[in-house]
View 1: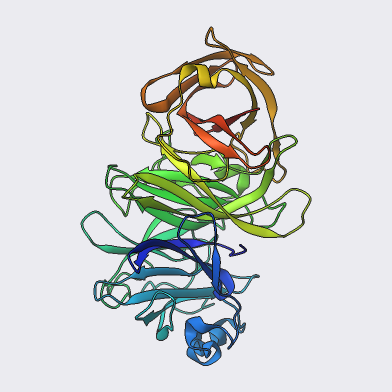
View 2 (view 1 turned 45 degrees about the vertical axis):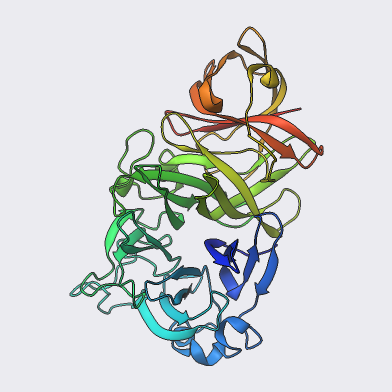
Length: 436
């Protein structure tokens, strides 16, 4: 399923848990199992049902602001009055002249009716949304890439921004879906000085004290180096910190300046002879309260396939340090308890070190062995220990200590169930292993 920049919303349809994803170009799809997707809509034209086959008139104000009839990464949330709010947005590619608006409807599949633009950017030489301040793209946001979410107290927020002045957050009115008055662009969370950071998404789960903010570093093209990073806070509006306890509000500048920060969950990689991704990013995430599972949903490109992209879903687990780690294999539902024991883990693995760079080429797998004497051998050496609840620790020579989670995953390349592990270092570097 090709939905670029997929933002997930979980709801109930006829008593069945259903996941909707909304993305760029008015594309959307739905699934009941996170594996099989059905298209709901696609294309910024008057054949699209989301805006009652009339998007050119409904969103004419936004199209006039940018001079382009296009739409980018959408987001949907249900308001306290039961209506669904659809956040539409777009910017021109060559400058941060953008906007975000909201439309509402009685069904998550629309039709949605425009309630107006709520934020603009790129008003050159004119006053910005911050009263008394002339718009400055190095410190003010590009008003795109919205994500709305409820905090643990039921308050609605919107995080947004792309490149330019960084990522910002606003308190929202949960009946209108619009920002509360008097905030301007809101509070700055990270990025600035045109740093290549965008696509923020914040996840809070009932069993965690943290709000996890996912962002994509790099560029979205196949060779752009998109990679998924996370930071966390105990309050929805921050401050957000990475695994090195670095305040992400201070992360700004060029790629070499921002690359050391944030916990890098995944970038481009390739398991030899199996599969790989290039520029995975602009993710969303969802918690299934019934099963306790967490899922990462994103688009990705692939090695040797140009700019073709598709949606992928991977399960996430929480390691002993309270950080999410991403399963190495694409999600497939399993029967029974996902319990891995010591003997299961013994054997040879394809191993990926995601490192910390903004990589435009795929990290290639190497070969390692987890041995019964708790040693690691092969292309790297070290020790490993399986702990309770599938927790695993790896001490790798010249790389350091990694805390993670082992799990059974379905390898679609070999068509078999295999033990895997995913772990993070204190520096925020992810390593993966998938048994041969």
